[in-house]
Image (cartoon, rainbow, N blue to C red; front, side, top):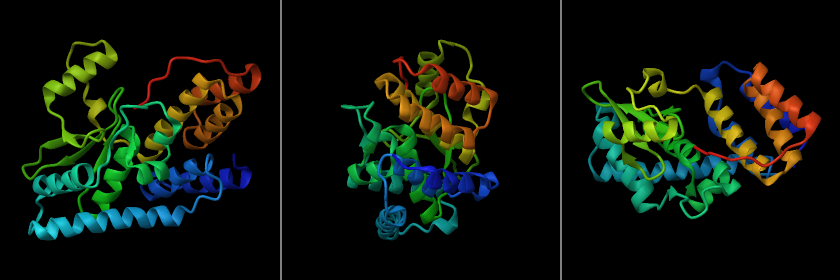
Amino acid sequence: MIGSADLVLFGHLVGRPDRDIDLERAALLVAETEYPGLDVGAYVTKLDRLAATVRRRLAEARLDVARAQPTRTLAVVLDTLFRELGFAGNVANYYDPRNSFLNQVIDRRTGIPITLALVLMGVGRRVGLPLAGVPFPGHFLVSTTAEAGEAILVDPFDGTLIELPQLQRLYAETTGDLGEIAQHHLMPAGKRQILARLLNNLRAIYQVRGDEPRVRQMLEWMLLVNPSDETRKLFEDAVGTGVSGAHVSLN
C-alpha cells in the first residue's frame, strides 16, 4: 500500500471545486493504493485510444456530434465499447476488488457499474457526448439528454438503455419501496460523490475480508472526499475497535 505523499496528492486533486476535479486521475490514484507506481498517464492515454476507436466508428456512421445527435451517437459509443471492444460487467466475480480499480477495468474490460461508468463517461467526454453519472440506489447509472430534451439512462454494467419499468423494478428491489422513484435519485452525481461511492465500495470489500489496514486506508481517503461526521465516525471506529466482516453491496 502507498504512503502519505500519495494521500496528499489525492487531497490536492479533490480539494478543487467539483467541476475542476480530474475524475479519471483521482480514480487512478485510488487504484495506486493497490498498484504502487501505477503509470496514471499511461491509463489516461488508453482512454484516449478507446475514444479514438469510437471516433472512427462515428465517422464511419457519418455522425457529427457537433450537430447534436446524442441518441445516435450514444448508440455508436455503446456498440463500440460493449459489443466491439468487449467491456462487460463482471458477473462471475462481482466482488473482486479489481472491479473497483480503473486501471484493471481498462485492462481487463470488466468491472462493476461505477467503474464501467467511468470508462463510458471518459470516452463520451472525449468524443463530445456529455454523459453524467447517476447515483441510483444500488446500481450506478449514466445519463445523457436526447434531442427533444428527455433524459436517456444507460446501465453501464451491460451497455444497454434502461427504461422506466426496469428502473422501477430495480428501485423496488434495492429499497423495498414500491412507490414512485424520488427525483433526487435520478440527479447527476458530482465528482466528489462518485469518488466517495468508489471508495466506499472498496471499504465494504475490505471489511468483508477483515482487512483492517485497507479499511482504515479507504476511510482515510474518504475523509478527504467527504469529511462528514458519519465518515469520521466510521474511521474512528475502525481505528479504535478493528474491523469485522459484514454484508457488502457494490454498485
